[in-house]
Length: 499
Ligand code: BGC
Image (cartoon, rainbow, N blue to C red):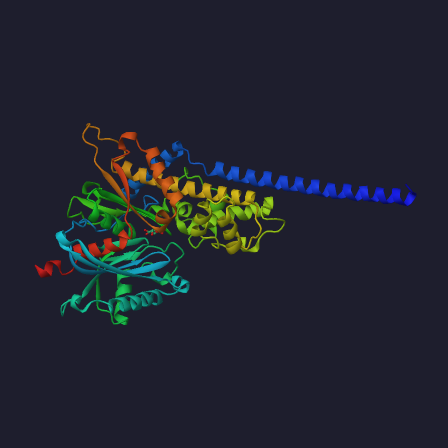
């Protein structure tokens, strides 16, 4: 071999070595990234852990807070609002009633024909309308005028033979799913907004007056006979179908629970004594907080940057409005610190609420071998292309941790309620175990199957075995709308004038 050839061979070998070194470095770098990313998921899992023991503490704390909230005004983060519903549907309700269900990203208007004991729900029609985002932060008259005009369009589709007789107004049950201090069954003042709504001129105002004024402006002849939270509506709708319903839980955009309290546990300061032996209480459990909740830096940041910092802490760990954003925050940290999606951080990952809980659910349920739904979601929603299977698996891992924590905490909340009403163990006198039914509603519960099954499994895990068949969870699909119409019937303002 000549000198030139030797030199060329040497250069070639050196180049090959350099390339090999780069490859090795890259492999090491990538292995380092993976190790870091996997360690971050593991750390998240540890911080979000909800072993049974912890959940029992959460359930105990929920029951304690319920007592404290009933004992004195402001005695607890739980508002424990008296609903004035002491007369739950019996099945005898009759006539045509409207309902308006406002509380999430959409509102619904319903028309229900009730046929009494024989007929039950003869006919039910509804229309669902998306709330334009600018109306969620505008003025109350803009929001209510929009709703009233949509309701007026719906009323115009009413069959002629169902029109109320002259001199009689149509009646409506208004499901308004925000914390309201009720002043009667058909009036109440807004305490605060939640779930991304912020219309300051309504806080402290009577929401029924605001709605009624909008009806008048729109020329709509409608009387609001009942003002209810969605939990109350769900409980009423649930009770109509099953007499053993004693509590209702919403797991949707927001979260909350209501339950039936015994008259002797209702203190005077809370409101007038129930006419029957019981009264439904709106807990506003979304505002629950406790040192037992496994919060992380992601929850803290989400809270601080939210429209209602320091409030609705339980809701921010559990409900549909927030789960997707917790996942986004975790992925953003993994992108920054472990280069999960390559050397640069995908810009869209920085946008709050861009990853919604339905997107998270779609990824979490992906059972394809190459996790193509995860890949497509990352691409379509976050602009992250060419993700490897390993990356996709880690993303699912994050969804799993966040959903599991939410579902398990929600189940612990239910156990807290059962504890408060003495349905968390068999009767001490050895008597028959009563059937206890919890009516559930909300998109998260309805559509996020893994969340729902984890919730149901956790409930079983936390309750004694002999209660496993007597505590029943039912899905009251759109129970809150039907429930509000039923309550408009039970509390019809013609009820007494007719007789
Ligand atoms: C509201 C509750 C409501 C729940 C579910 C929460 O944000 O404060 O009043 O019941 O969402 O819609």
